[in-house]
Length: 249
Image (cartoon, rainbow, N blue to C red; front, top):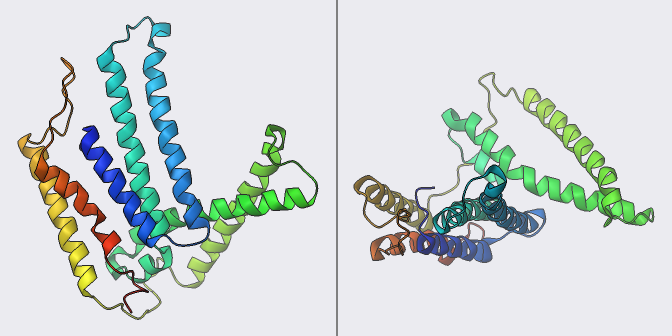
Protein backbone atom coordinates (compact mmCIF):
# COMPACT_ATOMS: atom_id res chain seq x y z
CA UNK A 1 0.00 0.00 0.00
CA UNK A 2 3.01 2.31 0.29
CA UNK A 3 3.83 2.42 -3.42
CA UNK A 4 2.25 3.07 -6.80
CA UNK A 5 5.51 2.50 -8.68
CA UNK A 6 4.63 -0.11 -11.34
CA UNK A 7 8.09 -1.68 -11.26
CA UNK A 8 7.80 -2.54 -7.57
CA UNK A 9 4.20 -3.67 -7.97
CA UNK A 10 5.18 -6.05 -10.79
CA UNK A 11 7.96 -7.57 -8.69
CA UNK A 12 5.67 -8.00 -5.66
CA UNK A 13 2.95 -9.57 -7.80
CA UNK A 14 5.45 -11.95 -9.42
CA UNK A 15 6.83 -12.90 -6.00
CA UNK A 16 3.33 -13.65 -4.72
CA UNK A 17 2.65 -15.84 -7.75
CA UNK A 18 5.90 -17.79 -7.18
CA UNK A 19 4.90 -18.53 -3.59
CA UNK A 20 1.45 -19.60 -4.78
CA UNK A 21 2.89 -21.87 -7.48
CA UNK A 22 5.32 -23.48 -5.04
CA UNK A 23 3.04 -24.09 -2.04
CA UNK A 24 -0.55 -24.01 -3.29
CA UNK A 25 -2.95 -26.41 -1.64
CA UNK A 26 -5.43 -28.54 -3.60
CA UNK A 27 -9.15 -27.99 -3.25
CA UNK A 28 -11.23 -24.81 -2.99
CA UNK A 29 -8.21 -22.83 -1.79
CA UNK A 30 -6.57 -23.43 -5.16
CA UNK A 31 -9.50 -21.88 -7.00
CA UNK A 32 -9.73 -18.96 -4.58
CA UNK A 33 -6.45 -17.53 -5.92
CA UNK A 34 -7.99 -17.12 -9.38
CA UNK A 35 -11.00 -15.41 -7.83
CA UNK A 36 -8.76 -12.84 -6.15
CA UNK A 37 -6.95 -12.24 -9.46
CA UNK A 38 -10.28 -11.58 -11.16
CA UNK A 39 -11.29 -9.19 -8.39
CA UNK A 40 -7.97 -7.39 -8.84
CA UNK A 41 -8.61 -6.95 -12.55
CA UNK A 42 -12.12 -5.70 -11.81
CA UNK A 43 -10.69 -3.22 -9.27
CA UNK A 44 -8.32 -1.80 -11.89
CA UNK A 45 -11.10 -1.51 -14.44
CA UNK A 46 -13.51 0.07 -11.97
CA UNK A 47 -10.93 2.59 -10.70
CA UNK A 48 -10.12 3.63 -14.27
CA UNK A 49 -13.78 3.77 -15.25
CA UNK A 50 -14.44 6.29 -12.47
CA UNK A 51 -11.96 8.64 -14.13
CA UNK A 52 -13.34 8.06 -17.61
CA UNK A 53 -16.81 8.96 -16.33
CA UNK A 54 -15.60 12.35 -15.20
CA UNK A 55 -16.97 14.11 -18.35
CA UNK A 56 -20.42 13.25 -17.06
CA UNK A 57 -19.52 15.32 -14.00
CA UNK A 58 -18.02 18.04 -16.22
CA UNK A 59 -14.45 17.28 -15.03
CA UNK A 60 -11.69 17.20 -17.62
CA UNK A 61 -9.77 14.00 -18.23
CA UNK A 62 -5.99 14.25 -18.30
CA UNK A 63 -3.26 11.71 -18.94
CA UNK A 64 -2.08 12.09 -15.36
CA UNK A 65 -5.51 11.33 -13.92
CA UNK A 66 -5.83 8.16 -16.02
CA UNK A 67 -2.34 6.99 -15.04
CA UNK A 68 -3.06 7.70 -11.37
CA UNK A 69 -6.25 5.64 -11.60
CA UNK A 70 -4.46 2.75 -13.31
CA UNK A 71 -1.66 2.68 -10.75
CA UNK A 72 -4.01 2.92 -7.78
CA UNK A 73 -6.06 0.10 -9.27
CA UNK A 74 -2.87 -1.90 -9.82
CA UNK A 75 -1.92 -1.38 -6.18
CA UNK A 76 -5.26 -2.83 -5.07
CA UNK A 77 -4.89 -5.69 -7.56
CA UNK A 78 -1.44 -6.61 -6.22
CA UNK A 79 -2.73 -6.42 -2.65
CA UNK A 80 -5.52 -8.84 -3.57
CA UNK A 81 -2.96 -11.06 -5.28
CA UNK A 82 -0.88 -11.19 -2.10
CA UNK A 83 -3.93 -11.97 0.04
CA UNK A 84 -5.04 -14.61 -2.47
CA UNK A 85 -1.62 -16.22 -2.24
CA UNK A 86 -1.73 -16.28 1.55
CA UNK A 87 -5.25 -17.67 1.35
CA UNK A 88 -4.17 -20.44 -1.03
CA UNK A 89 -1.00 -21.62 0.74
CA UNK A 90 -2.00 -21.34 4.40
CA UNK A 91 -4.24 -23.50 6.55
CA UNK A 92 -6.56 -21.46 8.81
CA UNK A 93 -6.60 -24.26 11.38
CA UNK A 94 -2.79 -24.34 11.56
CA UNK A 95 -2.81 -20.56 11.92
CA UNK A 96 -5.20 -20.85 14.86
CA UNK A 97 -3.19 -23.69 16.40
CA UNK A 98 0.06 -21.71 16.24
CA UNK A 99 -1.38 -18.53 17.70
CA UNK A 100 -0.30 -17.37 21.19
CA UNK A 101 -2.98 -17.26 23.82
CA UNK A 102 -3.08 -13.44 23.93
CA UNK A 103 -3.58 -13.24 20.16
CA UNK A 104 -6.16 -15.99 19.96
CA UNK A 105 -9.16 -13.74 19.25
CA UNK A 106 -7.64 -11.70 16.37
CA UNK A 107 -6.08 -14.81 14.87
CA UNK A 108 -9.44 -16.54 15.06
CA UNK A 109 -10.99 -13.67 13.13
CA UNK A 110 -8.17 -13.91 10.57
CA UNK A 111 -8.68 -17.64 10.27
CA UNK A 112 -12.38 -17.18 9.64
CA UNK A 113 -11.61 -14.58 6.97
CA UNK A 114 -9.13 -16.94 5.29
CA UNK A 115 -11.63 -19.79 5.24
CA UNK A 116 -14.47 -17.64 3.88
CA UNK A 117 -13.40 -17.64 0.23
CA UNK A 118 -12.62 -21.40 -0.02
CA UNK A 119 -15.84 -22.32 1.76
CA UNK A 120 -17.87 -20.04 -0.50
CA UNK A 121 -16.24 -21.47 -3.63
CA UNK A 122 -16.89 -25.02 -2.45
CA UNK A 123 -20.52 -24.18 -1.68
CA UNK A 124 -21.01 -22.57 -5.10
CA UNK A 125 -19.57 -25.68 -6.78
CA UNK A 126 -21.89 -27.95 -4.79
CA UNK A 127 -24.99 -25.86 -5.58
CA UNK A 128 -24.13 -25.67 -9.29
CA UNK A 129 -23.60 -29.43 -9.42
CA UNK A 130 -26.97 -29.96 -7.74
CA UNK A 131 -28.59 -27.65 -10.30
CA UNK A 132 -27.02 -29.58 -13.19
CA UNK A 133 -28.33 -32.85 -11.74
CA UNK A 134 -31.82 -31.34 -11.69
CA UNK A 135 -31.43 -30.25 -15.31
CA UNK A 136 -31.10 -26.50 -14.60
CA UNK A 137 -28.71 -24.39 -16.66
CA UNK A 138 -26.53 -22.78 -14.01
CA UNK A 139 -24.71 -20.68 -16.60
CA UNK A 140 -27.73 -18.45 -17.32
CA UNK A 141 -28.20 -15.15 -15.53
CA UNK A 142 -31.76 -16.17 -14.66
CA UNK A 143 -30.34 -18.98 -12.54
CA UNK A 144 -28.32 -16.53 -10.44
CA UNK A 145 -30.96 -16.13 -7.67
CA UNK A 146 -31.25 -19.91 -7.45
CA UNK A 147 -27.50 -19.99 -6.92
CA UNK A 148 -27.15 -17.07 -4.50
CA UNK A 149 -29.94 -18.07 -2.10
CA UNK A 150 -28.59 -21.57 -1.29
CA UNK A 151 -25.06 -20.20 -0.95
CA UNK A 152 -26.20 -17.55 1.55
CA UNK A 153 -28.32 -20.08 3.42
CA UNK A 154 -25.41 -22.50 3.69
CA UNK A 155 -23.13 -19.69 4.85
CA UNK A 156 -25.56 -18.76 7.62
CA UNK A 157 -25.87 -22.38 8.71
CA UNK A 158 -22.08 -22.76 8.85
CA UNK A 159 -21.78 -19.50 10.82
CA UNK A 160 -24.33 -20.75 13.38
CA UNK A 161 -22.55 -24.11 13.61
CA UNK A 162 -19.22 -22.36 14.11
CA UNK A 163 -20.66 -20.11 16.81
CA UNK A 164 -22.10 -23.12 18.64
CA UNK A 165 -18.77 -24.93 18.37
CA UNK A 166 -16.89 -21.91 19.73
CA UNK A 167 -19.34 -21.60 22.62
CA UNK A 168 -19.01 -25.31 23.43
CA UNK A 169 -15.22 -24.92 23.61
CA UNK A 170 -15.50 -21.98 26.01
CA UNK A 171 -14.31 -19.32 23.56
CA UNK A 172 -14.19 -15.92 25.26
CA UNK A 173 -14.34 -17.45 28.76
CA UNK A 174 -10.63 -17.91 29.30
CA UNK A 175 -10.43 -21.52 28.15
CA UNK A 176 -8.63 -22.87 25.14
CA UNK A 177 -7.84 -26.31 23.79
CA UNK A 178 -4.16 -27.25 24.04
CA UNK A 179 -2.30 -28.24 20.88
CA UNK A 180 1.15 -29.57 20.19
CA UNK A 181 3.57 -26.74 19.47
CA UNK A 182 5.17 -26.93 16.02
CA UNK A 183 8.94 -26.93 15.81
CA UNK A 184 10.86 -23.80 14.81
CA UNK A 185 13.12 -24.79 11.92
CA UNK A 186 15.64 -23.02 9.71
CA UNK A 187 13.02 -22.17 7.10
CA UNK A 188 10.85 -20.43 9.69
CA UNK A 189 13.76 -18.32 10.89
CA UNK A 190 14.76 -17.45 7.34
CA UNK A 191 11.22 -16.31 6.50
CA UNK A 192 10.96 -14.15 9.61
CA UNK A 193 14.35 -12.49 9.07
CA UNK A 194 13.62 -11.86 5.39
CA UNK A 195 10.21 -10.38 6.23
CA UNK A 196 11.69 -8.02 8.81
CA UNK A 197 14.38 -6.89 6.37
CA UNK A 198 11.79 -6.25 3.65
CA UNK A 199 9.54 -4.35 6.05
CA UNK A 200 12.44 -2.28 7.39
CA UNK A 201 13.73 -1.42 3.92
CA UNK A 202 10.36 -0.27 2.62
CA UNK A 203 9.59 1.65 5.83
CA UNK A 204 12.98 3.39 5.61
CA UNK A 205 12.35 4.33 1.96
CA UNK A 206 8.89 5.67 2.79
CA UNK A 207 10.21 7.70 5.74
CA UNK A 208 13.14 9.21 3.82
CA UNK A 209 11.31 9.70 0.52
CA UNK A 210 13.84 7.64 -1.42
CA UNK A 211 13.27 5.03 -4.08
CA UNK A 212 10.38 6.74 -5.89
CA UNK A 213 7.65 4.79 -4.11
CA UNK A 214 5.10 7.22 -5.54
CA UNK A 215 5.04 8.23 -9.19
CA UNK A 216 5.30 11.98 -9.83
CA UNK A 217 2.15 13.16 -11.61
CA UNK A 218 2.50 16.95 -11.79
CA UNK A 219 4.01 16.84 -14.31
CA UNK A 220 3.81 13.15 -15.18
CA UNK A 221 7.29 11.61 -15.02
CA UNK A 222 8.73 8.18 -15.67
CA UNK A 223 9.32 6.62 -12.23
CA UNK A 224 12.79 5.76 -11.03
CA UNK A 225 13.80 2.34 -9.80
CA UNK A 226 15.88 1.59 -6.72
CA UNK A 227 17.86 -1.68 -6.89
CA UNK A 228 17.57 -1.93 -3.11
CA UNK A 229 13.77 -1.77 -3.21
CA UNK A 230 13.60 -4.18 -6.15
CA UNK A 231 15.71 -6.64 -4.17
CA UNK A 232 13.56 -6.15 -1.09
CA UNK A 233 10.39 -6.69 -3.12
CA UNK A 234 11.85 -9.82 -4.71
CA UNK A 235 12.78 -11.15 -1.27
CA UNK A 236 9.07 -11.70 -0.64
CA UNK A 237 9.43 -14.75 -2.91
CA UNK A 238 11.91 -16.46 -0.55
CA UNK A 239 9.20 -18.82 0.86
CA UNK A 240 8.79 -20.23 -2.66
CA UNK A 241 12.30 -21.71 -2.46
CA UNK A 242 11.91 -23.12 1.05
CA UNK A 243 10.37 -26.53 1.77
CA UNK A 244 6.82 -26.49 3.07
CA UNK A 245 5.90 -27.65 6.54
CA UNK A 246 4.92 -31.10 5.31
CA UNK A 247 7.86 -31.34 2.85
CA UNK A 248 10.42 -30.40 5.50
CA UNK A 249 9.41 -33.16 7.93
